[in-house]
Amino acid sequence: MSLSKEEIAKRIAKEIKDGYYVNLGIGIPTLVANYIPKNINVVLQSENGLLGMGPFPFEGEEDADLINAGKQTITTLPGSSIFDSAMSFGMIRAQKVDLTILGAMEVSENGDIANWKIPGKMVKGMGGAMDLVASAKNIIVAMQHINKAGESKLLSKCTLPLTGVKCIKKIVTELAVLAVLPEGGFQLLERAPGVSIEFIQQSTAGKLIIEGEIPEMEFD
Image (cartoon, rainbow, N blue to C red):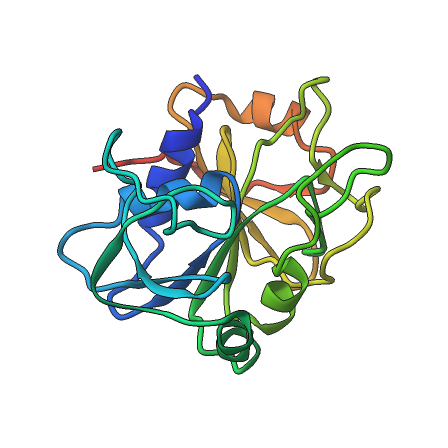
């Protein structure tokens, strides 16, 4: 059984360490804010100018003036601060962000990412993705392993316009957790509960590296 978007976010939340400053991109990454363990202290940064982002508000408690980079209403935590885009991107370009979590349309086996444009289709645009992938210390991608046509989005080479080159370290999809190796290739680290290694192989167009027993993901 493949993971839901919420389960992908929940698994990624396990990668966040105490004291991290974390940027959450548009799409699945924004859901990560709902699953950060309560026993760790993390500061979430939104590139439109916010430090101290909390989980999504309950229905009826939204404040239309408080939004994230994807224009979704959010909450703030005690001690949060709001500032302009110049300050926000100054933080990003100065590598003050410990972890960036991004969505992607495609990732290549050498860590290239394409996540801002599909020719001929309307998408939200570049946003801050190019700055984030060029400056972040560590980048995890939250994405679907296969597209709506059943085609792999983990490729030997990206076919869409690139956002960044050789910058992705880890990927979490509805099927698996994978590391991008420095020498190239997707190393299979974990698989979604009930998903076979064979199905992951069939769903991965790029080079897939399998070593030893591959455990199922754990969420507790």
